[in-house]
Image (cartoon, rainbow, N blue to C red):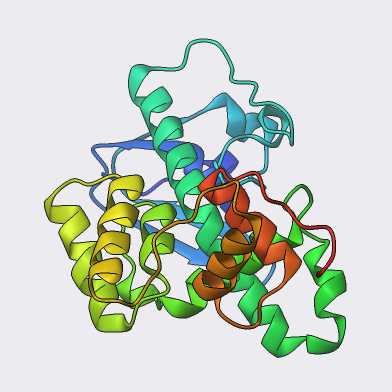
Length: 246
């Protein structure tokens, strides 16, 4: 079969290749040039090019959808998507949601080390997430290295064991996977063991303000801040928020 390179496919944007459906293709070669264009040599087979290529839509979002489908406040999907396409989009959304606390935590730790002079200003880049929340995420990310994070568990599971040493973290995370435990169940199991070992005080009544503050300082350790305290109160659903040190 003689080689014939379709003129319309001689040069395509890298993003456009995501819309190629190649059927019965036995040999194909892709090379990337310095101008971020990709040349496709088709030796055999049939190529179907989606309408998206004709429009040359770029992919500038994490869901790998046409740019006009995704905004900061909406996901506008075209009609006629197949079940598999909808499933793939849902899987990506779930992965993004699950990864965001880790991404933001690792990002905070990086900018604190790389750009300490403008660290506080850079935190404002993540709109809608309070600095206290970012600090907690950074603390968890720092306490649990990427290679020890369990993809089968949520970030909240890891938050529940972050204050432990590495060995105990690994033990409890493995326990949570084996027992299919929720983050709340894991947190309670860790707390009960630490109380039994004399490493943690029983949770105080929400009406005992001094006891709550002592519990907060003991739980969070140093450096202890009002923001971290208030984040802990939200996490524990205890109505004892502070506006200033007393």
